[in-house]
Image 1: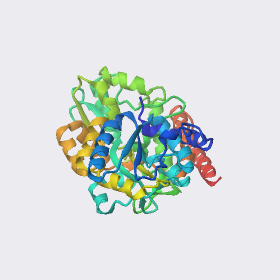
Image 2: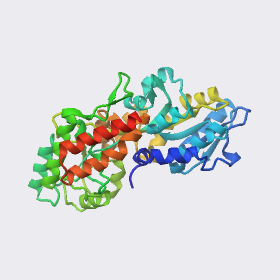
Image 3: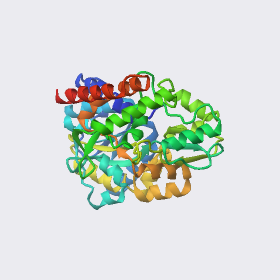
Image 4: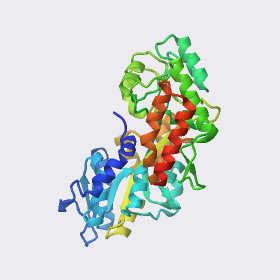
Length: 406
């Protein structure tokens, strides 16, 4: 049930090994892009297929260039792209998540795009997410992030702080004051991240253009303060590693809490409830900034028709018509600002998630992030379960730094 963006990040190491082994559908010549006639091959998943096909037809009509839209399982795209592009059998363009960027650039399989003035027409965070070393490597089409989902029948107003949320939940007399999912001993650092940032402890430092440096930024007093808070919430019972995604969603659906921290992928489970989408309450005094995930399209570094492919991306998949079609297919806020404005005006749920997303931080796509995931969640779960916050957190920081250094 979890979104593909987070799943892709968590499985980055596994996918990298798959790519290196040459697995996937790399032996299928029908998926290749070696045609030198000017035709383009685009990989899409089922959700995006119709919208991309419509843009491809418009492109063919206007330019005479044929576009072959190839249907792929989204979970296979990352590994297959890594395996096939170096052999010349990959597509010219593929759909993908922004947090694949670090692995893609490290392996030299993607090329930067020439967006020109078009970049200013997109939500700022969506461009930042696809930016590395001052260059933009993906055309964004959708953004998604978590927020505080509120049952207005149980809580009339939005809490500004964690303590206010807990107090409101207790006043409502529900089983759970607030629901924040975890995943047993694995933890869930993605869902807990906005509380961490509210203590001023982002995972990595950011450069001026919004891209990430390799400087780990969640250590020191700020990280220790967050860890101490985690331990206190575990002791109080307001956080529990036993509150899995399914348990949290079912509890909120049944009116057992006025609040749940979650994303738009949960909304269809809450049919019949009157909902509001609010900023995540701050636990540490600063703004609680969740991760934002961005979906987009990458250009293969081995495309023999790179200029034509860039034209298709920048002038056909970035139109309001195409971006709105992609939004309607996936029900995620469009990356193109004019499309996002209209979607938000029509749907208060989209508007709420978009407003929270405006203060969100792109999930790091740098290669160093792969060294973070394996330590991060288990450490948080251990602290919530009763481990000493300071020593456990400091050991995690040392372990991550050692892994990055190696």
